[in-house]
Length: 300
Length: 306
Image (cartoon, helix red, strand yellow):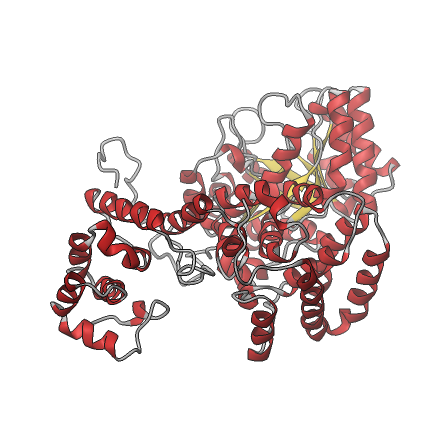
């Protein structure tokens, strides 16, 4: 299941993840600061799972559910701890719950504890539990639960794994990675927030997505422009020029996405196709348009 | 705006959610109950409770309706002692989940000793966790069963202002109100309460501590029970303030004691909820925009499915 890739979290980094989360929570906890610190101390010394359950239940009641307020420096610190980690969408209670979970050391292996927590989780807890994946001990042992999370019909649960979370990049095998990307497209979710989307791209994924695009077109449905990002690097090997040509003839966003995909490939056919849309090519040449912002360009 | 404080949505379709949202339901409470047939494993009951705090809450949010629930071991399944013992072990964990507004629906079915045992145990749990209670009153031997339910609540030291006695009728409501409890009425065709009868009760008793719900479930029932009763009551000359009390404010008052249900949940939801679990209510977003835009979408003569 596990592959060794750069940026992978180690057990050592979970210590500093706890410290970072605690710093953010304490800063925002106002009158509940003492409660939070005392509760963490209690978690550290108690091996009773009831203490953890009580803590997880109390956190939103005590701290509220506000968004975590982060500065650019905080995001830099997060990235330094684990490249790709983006806590931008985290909430105060979510951060506090993960800090508590990382502080607690119970009698059972973490994977067994985690399975039990997921089994009884409410919707928000599920999101929180999956957001913390990268920082838990023995991440590979969580594979079955992560699979269940990916299969969830609750989009936000899926995105808790897929978006801003380095765990898939660092721990998914090829099959799981590819199906996560495909599902993201299938449910109308974005690809740009997937950590390692380019790094983990592969010819098999490109083929799956090209088939998916054909299937959508055959059904008379739109194809998400972001899809071409993963097809681009393999456009020549897959002989996908006809599909890219079709995308170039679509909406402004599709044209830009197809253009960006083609600009990744230095072949005569790609250059020729890109040259057929000179305004798109010129815009891409400026370097101002990328996969993160192409959909903001309404008309070209 | 309406609250349906008793609706078993796990048995209902997306059409129902759409219809409820269009009719003005902004929040509902799904009590844990039985699902039409007995569960024979503790695990299936645990997964049911898990779906109440997880999946169903999310599903409702997609239609702009805030979903809350009550957690409990119902009276029918309390008669399977092995199952009941197992479920009781899990209840405390679920009772503390987000959106759990009461212990319920608990009480009597056939008024057996086992039902009594687990009713009392769960009343003790509600007291310990400072949660309101939703009491299911029995269909058979109802009047005596209702009185007995209140006797037991008092013996266990519960404050009646924290307890909703549900499924009342003309024969039980006087005692329920006189003893200081909230009186729930389930507008449910044939077996419980009709809404024309309900209007007459409102005319006589007013709106204090009376709560109207639909109790819609897997049987023939109407998910618009609250909205239709409100409209019928207004058309019958019941004071608007009374209608608001019984179809919105009273439920919010008693179940809000849990600390898990606030008007701001639907009027001004937290940012994280808007990004993840709650699509917002089109009625609250500025009038009746497009929710009723496909009136014939489910008509049999509309052959197009896109």
